[in-house]
Image 1: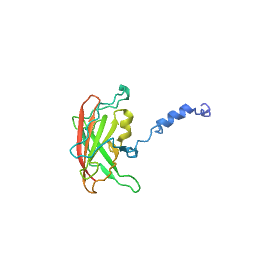
Image 2: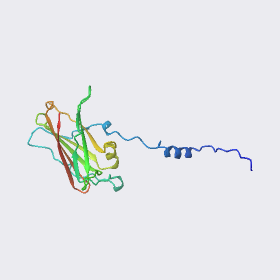
Image 3: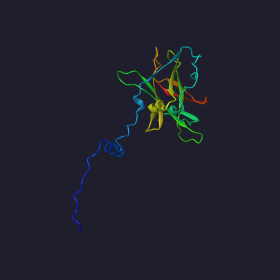
Image 4: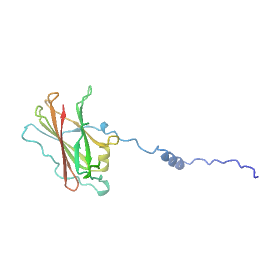
Length: 191
């Protein structure tokens, strides 16, 4: 029987510690909370009810292929979880939540140039259009809710005369995909 040797511990090297920390999950960045994004402000408004703004941006964003977010959605739905958010001492916001699906009905990644038009006949202006670029991987990641698997767009409407509380807002979301195809969704939301 051989005498046991004392166990020698090597000094931890910084690289070894970093690899171990990553293996234990410390390298994972916390998920982005899209409800903390700066709200999007309207880029266009119309005061005449018969004259809505264009539903689309002029042309798709031009991005290098390696920066483009993946897109496989064929259908877009404005979720019933969309809501008007009223907080004390803060502007009223509209959280629009979008679900994207492929041809089989399974959730699918979404990417492109999004325009959301908000209509309220009782407000002035009666139409507000919000452009939301979602073509790059970074832009999409900032707006994706990992928990609910939805895209969250926070809008800050600036009306001279707000809609009557309890009235309907009409929402129309139009996505212009990089290949030129268009996906649309419509919904009503209680103001």
